[in-house]
Length: 142
Length: 171
Image 1 (tube, chains in turn purple, blue):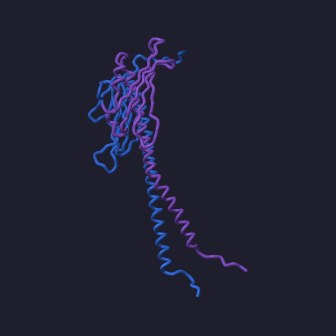
Image 2 (image 1 turned 135 degrees about the horizontal axis):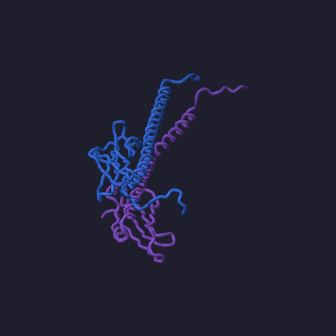
Image 3 (image 1 turned 30 degrees about the horizontal axis):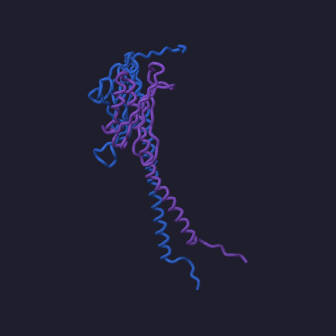
């Protein structure tokens, strides 16, 4: 006996199709704010990297005698305080086998856990054998 | 008795449901295309910024003298009498132009950095006469008067005066 083929689509088929479509739409919509956050984080990272480069440019240009004072007075630029909330600069002046160098890192309040951005600038070496280690931390607001 | 075909009410429900799904799909499609376009322009802007920051820092390091003009351009005079000018133009879209003029003044090279339409680029000499800052901001969409900091690059002129490079010299 030949079975008659069903014509059209059953309610259940329509419901499944609609549910799948809605799920895809919901998934895509939830990705929009995530994309926005990624963009914002990327822009902030770039700002922070430029800030470190600017600070190191100044620190590597000043005379040796003023370096310690300049490191202590280091502050995050006021322009960046809105973008990088509660930004903190950490500075280290190191002199060891890897050479004499300034290590600057910047960290700020972010929605996800992320490592601080760090940049290093090497300085002309002083007397051999003198191992110096100086560390500090400065908040953004003076 | 078995009914053939579909009733008016069933047709109406089917049409309404289809329309709703169709509208939702169109909305998502439109949003996706808008975001894609926005993401592309932001990517181009970021790439331009990175390129501009590198050129700017290198050029200022080589400059013997810096001048800010009334129209906001920055002119860097190099040791070999060449000059590099940075200026922002809005006539052909929002762009920052770097123009290198040879010592003879005849040859000119131009490099164009495409910006966002709402971007504003300024050059400022603040703390010290040999330090110049490139400030790049953009307006926040929908909020008049509020600006977003896009980039800050500070560089010192004549940064490596004692460094000389000998081509072909063995270490």
